[in-house]
Structures are given as structure tokens and as C-alpha cells.
Image 1 (cartoon, rainbow, N blue to C red):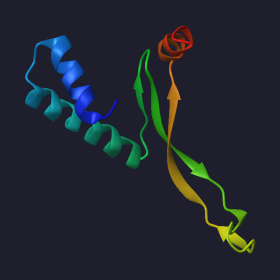
Image 2 (image 1 turned 45 degrees about the vertical axis):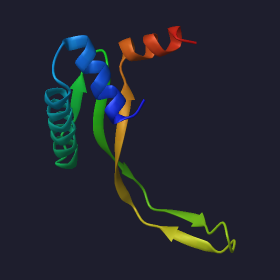
Image 3 (image 1 turned 90 degrees about the horizontal axis):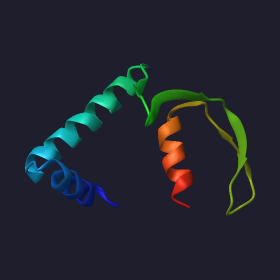
Image 4 (image 1 turned 180 degrees about the horizontal axis):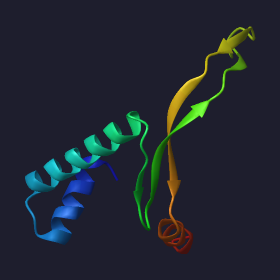
Length: 93
């Protein structure tokens, strides 16, 4: 499912216009992104938690040449699925 399909599905379930659902989805993504980028975490009970995670510097290997390279430390986004989401996915198998 891509973004436009998600907007259509939510619009159908809520009887809202696709344009309104699209604006809500954009605002939701913008707020989650901004909060995580500023170091906060966003927890949606039953769905999951979005947060920033520190990744340590490490040594890697260039797959083309086999040469060893240094990969710098980085802050990356992380999502942890909530219990309700995990159960829904496990039941869908």
C-alpha cells in the first residue's frame, strides 16, 4: 500500500474527503518527523513508538573493492511496534 492508497482507504472508512485526509496525513508525518528529529519520542498506544537511536561508528567493507572503510556514528530513526500491532500482524499469517 502506498501513500495515495492509504489516503483512499482512510477516506472510505471515515467518510472524509481525500483532500482532507491527505492534509491530516501530511500533518501527522510532519509532526512525528519534527518530534523525533528534536530528540523526543512519539508513542501511539497499540501501534508503536517512533524515536531517534544512536548508531556507533564502525568498520565496514566496500562491496566493490573489498577495501575496509570507516562508517561514522549517526543518529537514525527507529520504530518499535506496539503490542496491538504485533498481534494484528501475527494473526494475519
